[in-house]
Length: 206
Picture 1 (cartoon, helix red, strand yellow):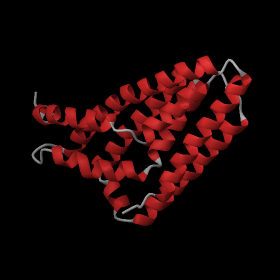
Picture 2 (tube, rainbow, N blue to C red; picture 1 turned 90 degrees about the vertical axis):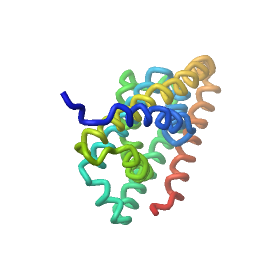
Picture 3 (cartoon, helix red, strand yellow; picture 1 turned 90 degrees about the horizontal axis):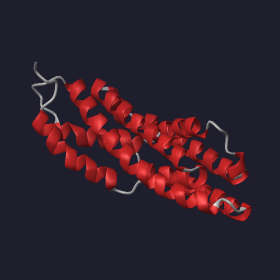
């Protein structure tokens, strides 16, 4: 049975993908904030949402839709400002809530937030379009190759970002026993979300 991707190219992609996952960025900071504010389990859920977002981006790129988006910068700007608004909304929620008010389904909310933040980051779309094609075999179907590389990026990011959130969650759980510390944790998380929103707002689409 012929594989829909080149195993040797996949092995060459592995260290490059891990190196990219280890580079601190918006996804890692988002999971850090989730862990600090909500705890380890929601941090892992947020990491899962981000990983799914990477796979969705790779699927879109493989279908050729991302190239259409990249050719129309106005669409990227719309996506970017939706992401900015969502991050600011998360920042406001963090400021208004306390750790005791976190809902029981915090992990589901964190997964949704991670997925949405990743999908509304046009930098991810452009990155996948620029990076993954370097490892494609033109003799093989394009979509399965994009999917294979997208899954690898997603799994690597899930583990690395999840571990960052796990460490932040451990510290947050110890500190949040005090109402004063809980308020400061909310402010710290809001600050991270606010900085991510500012970073996205200042990002150029070209």
